[in-house]
Amino acid sequence: MKSIKRILVLLITISFINCNDSDNSPSYPLNYENIAGLYGIESLKADVQTTISVSGIPVTASANAVGDTFQVDMIINADRTYSINGEYRIITTTRIPGTSPLTEEEIVVVDEDGTYVINENSINFTDPNAEFLTGVLNVTVFNEDSFTLAQELEESDSSTNTSVSADLAVGFIRK
Image 1 (cartoon, helix red, strand yellow):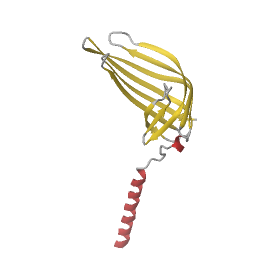
Image 2 (cartoon, one colour; image 1 turned 90 degrees about the vertical axis):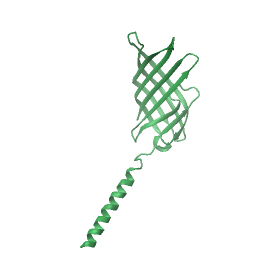
Image 3 (tube, one colour; image 1 turned 45 degrees about the vertical axis):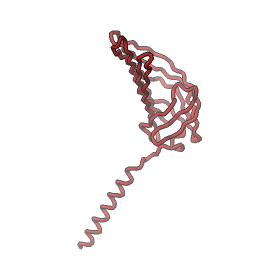
């Protein structure tokens, strides 16, 4: 009877160990074959902080942008090429200390073709004429139906005493 209990405990222990090992691997790995397909934009958000030194006093302005009315198709090919075409509306609210917030709407037209490289949890988009997707973007969500890209940028210009930080997040959904 003791040996049956030991065997049972051993089997249960092995089961738990095997379950724990399988949880560490991604259920849908980010690779060229899995990301290939036709996507639409589901969401777009950008936050920008600009600080300029005026007579030695830092003044920070912020801009928050949200996209909607997406009519954009993104084709990602397994051969490491992509194209993104269409248009969307972006609503930007700018806040400067001492003034009322300014809200502007703009229709943005996107027409880009280029190449991309997947690096573990990021994608590097290359198109010399790109204004929408460019550089290294982190993949924060990736599954069979959607993925989200995020990018954080920081730049400073000592000649104008200006620094800019920006956070961008774009969500794509498979069509």
